[in-house]
Every structure is written in C-alpha cells, then in structure tokens.
Amino acid sequence: MFRRPAPPPTSWATSSRLAAVFAFEAVLICLVLLRFHLAPMSAAFAALVGSLVVAVLALSFAMVAFVLIWRKGERGFGRALAGFVLALLLIAPAGFASWLALSVPAIVDVSTDPNDPPPLSHAEKERPADANPVSYPAERAAYQRKALPQIQSLLIDIPPDDIRKLVLRLMQERRWRVVADLRLAETAARVRLPDIAPSDRIEAVANSTLFGTTDDIAVRIRVEDGKTRVDMRSAARYGSYDFGANAGHVQRFLADLRDRALLPDQASQ
Image (cartoon, rainbow, N blue to C red; front, side):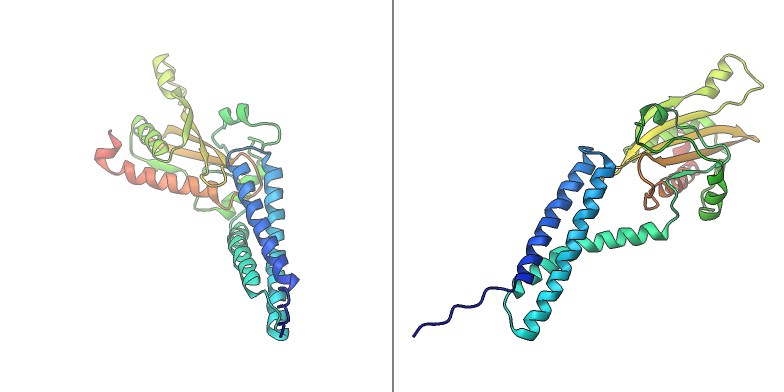
C-alpha cells in the first residue's frame, strides 16, 4: 500500500522566509555601507528603506500563511514562523526609530546661541557639496527656542583656561576627534588688545558607532561679566533627521561640563 506524498508547504510560507532572509541580508549590507562610508549616504539610506519594505512584505506573507495553515491545514508553519520572526526583528527597530524621529524636533543643527552660533570653520572646508550647509539661518533661531528651550548657554564662575581643559578632556572621553583648538583670547592678551574680548574655540567631529554618521561640533569659550560663558553647536553633516542626536550632544556635554567644573579637583587639572 502506497502512501500519498505529503503536499508541499504553502507558497506563502516559503515566500515569507525567502523575503525575510533577503531583507535581513540587505539590511546588513546597507549598515556596512553606511558605517564605513562605502556609498553615498542618501543612496544607502534609500536601499535600507527598500530592504525594510521587503521585510514588511515578508511579515504580510507570513500572516497569510498562518491563516491558510489554520483554516485549511496546509503545511509550512516552520517557514512562516521563521519569516515572521526575522521580519519582526528588522521592523521593530525601524518602527522605534520612526517613532523617535516623529517625537523629537526636526532640528539637525543645534546651538546654545541661535542668534550668534559658534562657527563651524573646519566643517565648512571639509563638508562636500551634497552635505548640509554650515550656515545657520536666522529663521531657525525662533523655532529652536520654542522646540528646545532646555538648550542654553553655560555661564559659570570658572577661569576660561580651566574650562578649556575640561572641554578637551570631555571630548577625548567621548572619542570625538578634535580638529581645531583656537586660543584667540590668549593671542589677544599677548599682543595687548584690551578693548577686544575674543573667544577661544574648539571644534571636533563625532561619528556614531552603528551608522557612522558624522556630526560637526564647535565649543566657544569667552569671558562675559566676569564669568566664563560656554556656547556649543552640534550639527549633522547629512540628513534632515538625527533622532535628537545633536540636541543630546549639546545637552549632555554641557551638563557634564558643569558637573566637572563644580568639582575643585577637576576644574584646576
């Protein structure tokens, strides 16, 4: 007596697994391209979005397969489950990133002094033509004050030179690459220009670990009313969304700087 061969798994389950595997491999390739700057960022992000669309299709195929397996007893549950889980692992982080992008202000160039932001002199020379401009439009100042009222200048009763040392130390701890350290105040004092109060300025470049995105940072230190005023600017080199990264750079850095400056043994080292 011959047994009837088992029917093949439903094509929806097979398609789900194949699409999920393809999306997973494509996402990995896109992340490598972004991290190591092997392709233009706009093209790599477009490919990443396309890969996530395929993951959504894989999730949809798996849902159809589950319905057919439940109602008609068709085979392929393991393949459908594999496609469903793999697609969900790709879509969940993307969904969280999308929610985060919508929940934070769309500001990729943040300054504690919107009216007179610290210049990004090094970035102006280094940014290619397809990067974001380094200019800070005047109309952005009012929007930033309303959207990010917590971003404020730091005014502290610590000598400027001590603050400069702390700034450099904090940048080093964050593994930011210092690209400029201009001692303008010291130069003015040396050539005896008492009527001018120029500012010291430190510029750095920060790269994210996962995507390899680049943010240009400038910190300005000057004396104001007998105290040291610190202004900071952080700007994404590419893109119109940064998921709050540059606002976070400024807020966390100045908070750490204030805390370190208030420790006597730290401020004088």
